[in-house]
Amino acid sequence: MEHLAFDDHELAVAQSPEPFSIEAEEIVLGGLLNDPQALERVIEILASEHFYVASHRTIYAAMRALYAQSKPCAIVLVMEHLLAQGRLEEVGGSRTLRRLSDMALNTINIDKHAELIRHKWKRRRVLEVFREGFRQAVNPTCDLDEVLSDCATALSQVSAVGIESERPIGDLLLEYFDHLEQASLSGQVPGVQTGFYDLDRLMGGLQQDSLTYVCAAPAMGKTSWILNLMLQAARQGVRCLFFSLEMGRNSLMQRILGSETEIESHRLAKAKLSATEWAKITRVISELSALGIDISLAQGLKASEIATRTKLWMRKNNVDPAKCLVCLDHMTLVRPESPRDDTRISVGKASGIFRELKNEMHIPMVVLSQLNREIQKRANKRPTLVDMQETARLEQDADMVIGLYRDEYYNPDSSERGIAEAIVLKYRNGPTGTVKLLFEDRFARFLNLAQSGGGV
Image 1 (cartoon, one colour):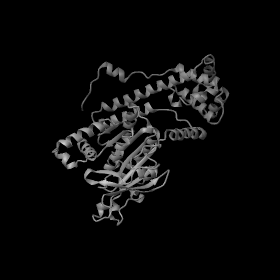
Image 2: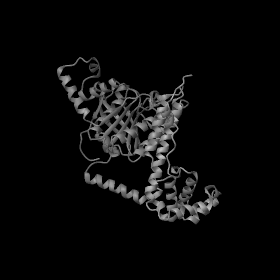
Image 3: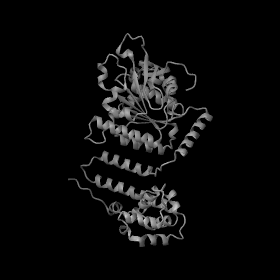
């Protein structure tokens, strides 16, 4: 077996003591015993797990329990609560609570000390993550990609940690009213517009906190559709992140340039172009480079890794969730969270992670998905929600499901050659329906069939 040697400094780092401040913990607990009303503020900052000393965690948990019962965390009530749980002696008895109360009588600024406790906890968690990564990495048989993924996910969770409190419905309604008022005054429709006029009229664009699945049988143009949507969103000033799990970088760039320059992909692949076409490519590259689009070409990502990368990308680039779009091509290529998961379980877990991501980060997310193969056995091959039954979790988690269909693919003599249908199969907040688009096969792009005009 391979053995790794570490110098004294590396071992010292791995074995370094945990950061904590017992004094700050005592000041906060004592301060709350003397000023129970301060718990309303502190509870927004601290969870019980943030305390280093076990008895302090128990005392603070008792205070939170009293708060939940609309009772003040006065010293007598805290004692009674702990006594009823059989945990009073575990924390040192009533003498400990009186000592905490007495030592904090002249202490002010509980909030500052609460922030210090949380800061120390975050440092401890970071050390825990690195120590666990260190422990796994020294094993030469470990899967390094899995170790890196686990560390990145854990660190992202530490960075994003917050105490999400319950909010009165009145506060939430007023915030939403402000959101509506600002949208009304600005004259801008809320959400990310797809650029497909009839689709935007039907659904009002892609809203924040929304997960949209775009499903279709093979060869319907899913990748082209999502690339067209992303480019149109980016031209509105929307910051976009595109995860390409299927296509290599050259194939993806060829697809984008072919659509934007109106040069067939097979001619781009041969690179035998006229001077006019070279000039057009140069101009388009300049235009697209100025847009806020970032593309992840990493292959074999888990859904948790996609979520972590999205959060880090948003923080690194200071992305506004209201002007943001995350796209994924496509769902069946997302790596299972566990090698033991079958397709149904793997897709279900991934969908749940994406639902949590869009809710946590307040972003619109669009994910491509294949349809059940049974659709090929039907006379009418237009997609329906039933065709997602093999992965029913997708339909459950989705705020919107859009199916793509091109009749000419199945019926060469179709009267609707060059026409594609974007079928809104599910819309949690609005109507369903079918929107017709132009599809230019040779340029792999979708265009509006209707003219712009009219409000959404």
